[in-house]
Amino acid sequence: MSVKMFSPTGMLPNTPYHHVAVATGTRQVHVAGQVAHTRDDSSIPPDLAGQVSQALRNVAHGLAGAGAGFRDVVRLTVYVTDWHPDKIVDFMAGVEAVAEEIGLPVPMPPASLIGVEILFEPDVLVEIEAIAVLD
Image (cartoon, helix red, strand yellow):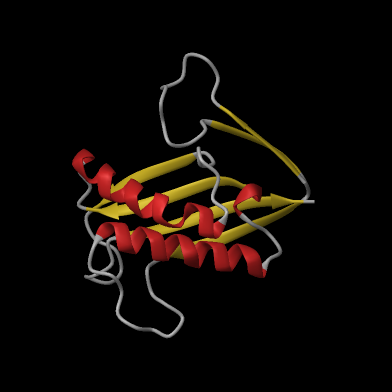
């Protein structure tokens, strides 16, 4: 499978993600929204950075189960409760804390960050979905 990621001239510069992904392949992998629950079901981190890190680990685990990794991802969708632009520092700290561990390229694949009022549990601050393409 081949994924080419880029950001054409004229699109918003200096983003932590690419604006465009072009994929060649026939098998799609859709990872449902992942939150910061751990495999042993211990408590989730109380902070945004910790939850982003654990949710990304869970996405990586889902991708690996399908024989994929973040290099195959063509789209990330992130939902964050009570979003405010000041939260980007904590959000990116969570990304940077696990990027090498989980093979998340920097810049990231094309992504959207969507602010929501609440997710399915009161303590959940972030949920992350992924779409990957394989041969």
